[in-house]
Image (cartoon, rainbow, N blue to C red; front, side, top):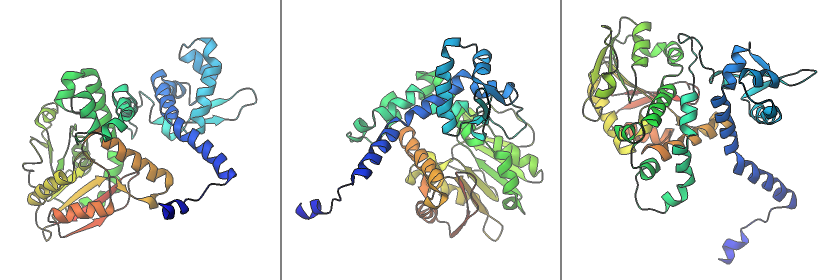
Length: 366
């Protein structure tokens, strides 16, 4: 004990003063999330967009039909959000004028669906809902219990995204599914364009989905009409997708079997599952693809935890890992974790392709 105590370095006065400020910041960081939630619920990003891309506080008060007495409080909210990069301040001699940043652009409602834009409000409102915040509030209690069920299931007696939650809270279930679709489908067209090289020489693709809507499969079929595209998802999700005569929609279970193809895609799927479950899914993918000599491969699009990605991006990846810990039985993984899963599933080799935002892309070979 004496040796352990002697290893403690007592902070300097200056370090303690800075530590207090850091403690304040980390203790109150949730207010940034709540301020962002408030802005989305009030419709501030959409109002700025409709006002031509810039708006004063007075403009926002009028556009949002807010009481005039709230103007100074709105100014404090906007000041915090601007300091966080949600909005930008346009210099003005009279009063601050706020414009959109790429972040707040993602929260604008009503932009043409055929653009690369996608309204992220459903994702934001899901992860800042009381149903989700309550999980974090009770996290210490969850750690003290032996049960390994995810905090969401432990708290609500139902599983996120599943029918049990639909029966328990239909409104929240609908919003969470929309949030999942935004999370999974955003920038699909950009991805197909930037990674078009992985489709060279490919004749058939099976896209394995989890509560999806066929967006990736449709994007592939449109970009590469010569490729035969199959979309595998849960039967209840496949029933919602209108037949188009182009894509083969299959209702099934990736834990049991996967429709055969030269290439299988798992985009934003495996982080939902435990390591053991991921090995089962990957093993079924290996069975479904052709030999390496015939161009067989599996493509994974998911987060690869990497400190080298920079402090902000790495923190984002770690937050998404704890997010999965609260919601489901899955996790985010670093490259060593991915390598273990790949080898356990029986693949002979793999390659890490270029990053795609906070995510990475891996190509697996049988």
